[in-house]
Every structure is written in structure tokens, then in C-alpha cells.
Amino acid sequence: MFSHIMVGASDLAASKAFYDATLGALGYGPGFQDDKGRVFWMAPTGIFSISIPINGEPACHGNGSTVGFAVSGPEQADAWHAAGVANGGTSCEDPPGVREGGMGALYLAYLRDPAGNKLCALHRMG
View 1: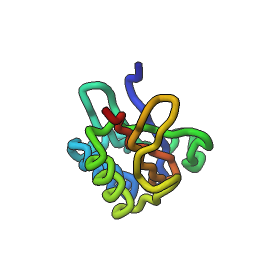
View 2 (view 1 turned 180 degrees about the horizontal axis):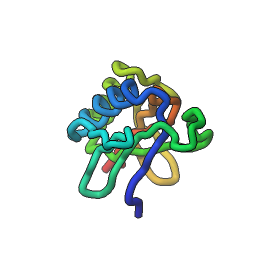
View 3 (view 1 turned 90 degrees about the vertical axis):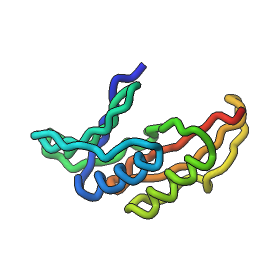
View 4 (view 1 turned 135 degrees about the vertical axis):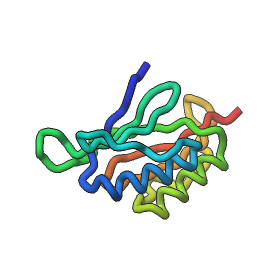
């Protein structure tokens, strides 16, 4: 459904370090920076990227927005969460764990990146 997701960053170096760590915990290599300063992480199913906003305004998070990353299991979600907290992110929502709801049992871990963007690692429990 999606080709790419790009979120704003105020400090590209801090955000790149954060995403290299969190996406590294999911098995992706370091992001690469293009000649416009944007940073990209490529996957077979799409692209995740960060950029200083091109309109010159400060980066800000979308209130009510969440970017979700699919993970292979609770262990990978926990590794993702730990990598994020160790690299400038902050834990938000409830601690990582199983939540029951209308979509069945989900293992969820939530973080905010250095720019305040809300992220989630999600595993659908079997």
C-alpha cells in the first residue's frame, strides 16, 4: 500500500543515529544520505526516510500520528525499543507487551524519536 514514509527531523545526525540503531535491531543496514541531506533506509517493501523540512520550518511530530514497524516477535520488538531508548528516543505509551483488542493479541512497543515522532514496533501474536 505504501511506497515510502518520510518524517521530519530537526537534528539529522541525532535522528540518523537513532534510526540506524532501531532499524539495525530489525536487520536493516545504516541509512544513506543523499545530496539534499535526506537519509533513507531501503527495504524490499518500501522506504523509510528522514529529512529536515524543505519549507524551512522546524520539524514537528504529527499529533495523533504513529509510524508502525512490523517485527518478527516480542524479542525483536524489545531489541528495537532498547536500541531506541539507548540512542536518544523516549519510551511512550505503556511498557512493551501484549495487548488484547479487536485485532487480536498484539505485542507492541512504542517510542518517540529525537524529533518527537511516535513510532511502534508491532508483532501479531499467533
